[in-house]
Length: 225
Image 1: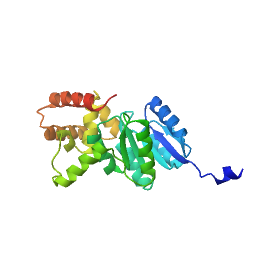
Image 2: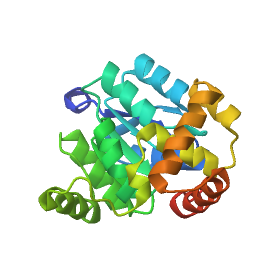
Image 3: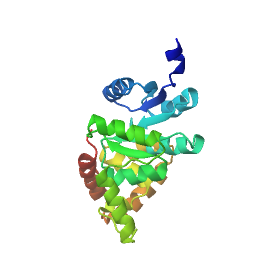
Image 4: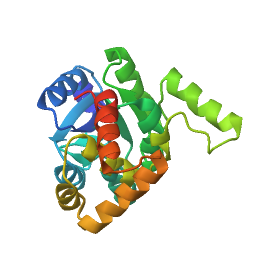
């Protein structure tokens, strides 16, 4: 009984991902650790923030694509409502484009699902210790960007897009109509069209047809879904 009483409470982790198999795999991995446990799961933005409010986890592990919704919004909601709650992004998506955005939104780390199990556990523990986690590739890229002193320099035109524009661009690449996008993002169709116009301007595309083609190709290359 004494040994049980002396044990430290396990760190409670909330998993937010719209793929059940990912939640199951991560849950198994976490529960195998003597000091970690899963306190709950969610599969979209609404259930994710509701679970945070109800369960008060010690950490959130989440993807940035949640049933067609941009996960950055959940990161920002957590940052605004629970500023001390650490968030680790575990994603399939291009880290060179999304990691910096995730950190700006309030995440404490970014790691891809292709990483080895020991790397994911290392990322979890580093974030729980109060540090920021990025793999060596991403750390080098960010340090190079900072040391170059040229914040306007980008490796891809897509980096010029704002978070909202990138969300619209991604959904266009998935074949979603402007009206559907407006309903998902709770904005007017006219606002979606304004986003599209700015996207075309930034990517130097002539018309909507070029935008659609570019978006589809980029989405296929960047989102392994």
